[in-house]
Length: 263
Image 1: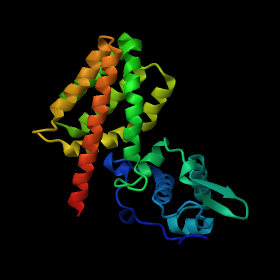
Image 2 (image 1 turned 90 degrees about the vertical axis):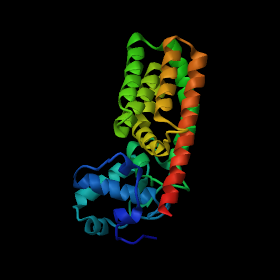
Image 3 (image 1 turned 45 degrees about the horizontal axis):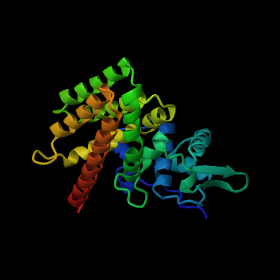
Image 4 (image 1 turned 120 degrees about the vertical axis):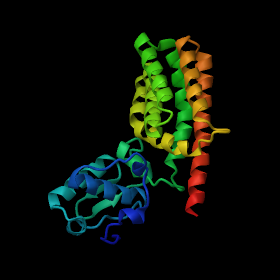
């Protein structure tokens, strides 16, 4: 069964995670990929349903047949759809999606409930980042140490600029993952870098001068650096776990605050 051929408007879909970091698709084809991808991820076209016919998509998005076919190829490569002759293009189950794909992550709604990728990311970080810090404490080179230190300094210097602070925060965690000298952990960092920035920007909504200060957050990151610098894997792991859990709590608080403001 085919869905309606009218594309959902951005306002109808609501804010996406891409909106938090100002991510905008490039070119006409990029905009169609982003719009159709968001519609699939948000359930406008649920798993098992057929996308509208090529001619209907051409009309809806005002692009050529070639552009639509290229869009479908991109979405297929991301695991969102598959095309079969004489049947059409069908939306695949979420289990087929490349959840670490940058676009697929960003297409999720900001206030997702059924499929909360920010929660999933927080849980994944609990498993991955403390171990990365442990490895970094015994494997980091002088260059790695310098990069982690530079990221800490950037965070300290950006405490009055939340956008710059979030960027430096991402760079800190990327530097620790890189210093683990584990190819899989490094790949994890590159896969979720944008989503880390989204998470950190949302966490900043929960900052409070009395019990959740940015100065404390910056200092806690500095403690992780100190443990790695003195080659203390046990301390590095425990301190990184504290940083991740504190971020998770701040994320939950901020999202509750954002939800209450919308009500």
